Image (cartoon, rainbow over all chains, first blue to last red; front, side, top):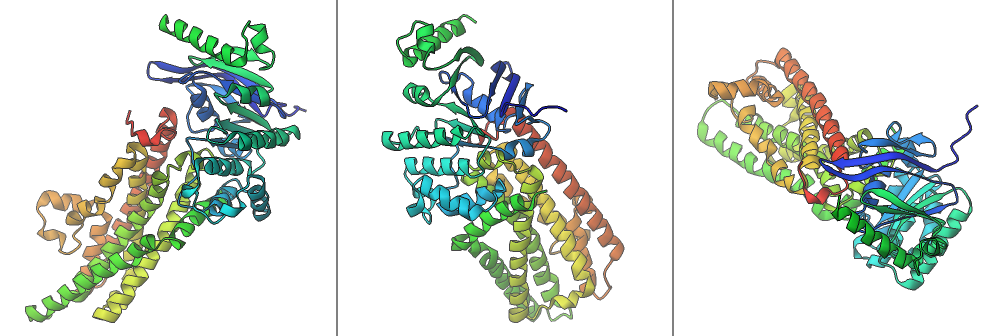
Length: 252
Length: 267
């Protein structure tokens, strides 16, 4: 008998080229249940390209992505049914109300007992008073909370968060980080989290992957990595890696 | 196919129609205006021609049937444009929604809304100008079916173009029925067309419908064999349109256009 895959996400030798440009080159990593993995890197490093491939909206040139052991290329719909995401560049339709958006996306993800789930998430993300407001009239922070509520609708096994707290004030951002950490603590869900906020990354991520020029150049625990590489902080390490990558990139 | 996911696509449109008179307006009002304009024109032509020929079923009926085809195509494409305008492709296509389910959702919305347009046109044409659909006899069913399938095929092909060319392709999509109408013989027999236009008319399913409609109005009975050709052509176009849509979808997933749709980067 084959034992089930212990990873919620397994990425193997992932490559993506756009013509001559190699955006992602041989990236391999995994996310385990109960783990929050930070995907870090300077702009243009290939983070969003990688996330788009995991979301099934961009076909890899080569490599394999498996979500909960299901091959994304072979069973896209089944693999994505246990996934969800929130990204600042993917706002929910502004001409639907908060509640309508949640109902439509709840049906897309075939969420059981959807009404109860919506009520719960309206409270968790403090959206109850906006339930009949069009998403387009919400502030950017409220829209981000709505995106996060949508991302939690199907209790995903794999959650992809692309700068999830970018438009949120520090107090709300702290609550949201705590909420996601609590959700992950049940040991069922794994998170791939991109952020440029190194304080946030250190606070929530169990492991980080530094991506540069489409390659993973560094991997480890965000709390110990700076010391291991002689940097004063994760922020400094990020700058060092980005500058080194920039220097190397100029000589490629 | 998952009914819940198809239902989500339909429910989104129901919410939009329910809360937006400007979306409901075109379903009824534009077609009503067409019926009124052409209804009065046919009434005028009847009064000045002094001929036995009745323009109402020939001209007004043609307008009604052509508007039906146009509405089917436009309603299907309009549903896709809702995702273009709200930049929602990423949210939809990064979900478990299958492309086929999305298409069936678009189709369901088109059936309901174009059906409502058709009912509005039939009622108005009957009340205001005495045009009865029963005057076409049993042939009205294949007339509508051929036009419906053609409208769906056009809508699916137009949706593929939108997906491939980006938001600005809107300006390319809306005039498509207008481009076809001179060749389809909507208001005149295709025999009046020059040879090269007649050749094009031969491969257009609507031309068989409008020729058939004129035959019925002239008391010759429906040309079933010609309608069968029109119907078969419509099915072939529908199959080709679906193949085109799926192939465009695969290409935009390959080159990443779905994820950066508004950039309109045709590569």
